[in-house]
Amino acid sequence: MSKLSLATVWLDGCSGCHMSFLDLDERLLALAEHVDVVYSPLVDAKVFPDDVDIALVEGAVASVDDEKKIREIRAHTKTLIAMGDCAVTGNVPSMRNPIGPDPILERAYLQNASTQQQIPCVVVPKLLKIVRPIHEFVKVDVYLPGCPPSANTFHSALMALITGQPLDVSALTRFGA
Amino acid sequence: MSSTVDIKTLVIDGKEVSARAGQTILEVARENGIEIPTLCHLDGLSDVGACRLCVVEVKGNHKLFPACVTSIFEGMEVTTQTDRLKKHRRTILELLFTERNHICSVCVSNGHCELQTLGQSQGLTHVRLPYRNPNLPVDASNERFTVDHNRCILCTRCVRVCAEVEGAHVWDVMGRGINSMVITDLNEPWGESSCTRCGKCVQVCPTGALFDKGKVGNSHPKHPDFLPYLNMMREAK
Image (spheres, rainbow over the protein chains, first blue to last red):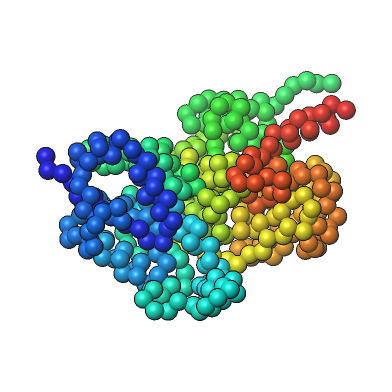
């Protein structure tokens, strides 16, 4: 059996879901017998490949860049997994939603900055007005809530998907887990 | 004095049960080990049928009935778990999650929250509706407790425990529909209200909306189980 291709993506999140994924520890070796990691912050690939079997997406959609990326990922992925609460609900990044991005930028880069007070505007992508979960932009196939989902959750969910076994997400994890 | 008790027989989820006249479907179901999910109901308080999670089907009637405020009758046939009911319960929970800013990961009640637990038990893995993201206040003026309106689901347990058990009636509801808010006195800051600082409202709050300032992180389990005992001891007097 040829290996499945696995991508992991980091949008507006803290990377905690990726850290929890790495907590699979020695089980990563067992996972590597089933999948090749073709794109990830953990590997060197710079371009999202054309044909990905499983994509784990961490983080909410908070900027124009996130939105562009999630649409591209969806177009090239068979099974898209919303990984963690930011991707599933918006979570902590969405806490700016009630007041909008401008007061946040002003507080961080003007009021609280002791030197070089300026709001970044070059290279960095423009923030969206509202931070939203990824399923508000593209179709999501599997939701794995949790902040972060535990290594056991990743293991059970990925093995179920790889082997085609039924997956009961609510038995594994919940919002805030 | 006659000691006859008016006993009714009915069927819940195919199980024949007997009950006293005037009991609710919820009471009878739980006495017989049949679990119906609830959120605004709390043993020891009056029922208001606010959350609608306990809706059940009654044979011969197309509309749904909230089990906590529907009395049983002779020959009633109740169903508590159908695809239709599960769909409605899920939607109710999704609406609650979208209505305010429930960020479980940073909530003092994470791991002890009835809304979060119900979400998991009802198979909610995401919310299909867009979030409303309202801008809501947090009132920390009380020296012991805080009310975070971002996490309030308007179950009115705080209102009921304050009026019915503490006898102070400091809490009430202001506004209508989606704009409703729980308030202390006539919308005074909690710290300047006639609150007795008994803390019963904090213990009965199903989410992290009312919490003790002495609790940090997510170490804030609530203990509403004091209520039935308190009521029992008062009745015994």
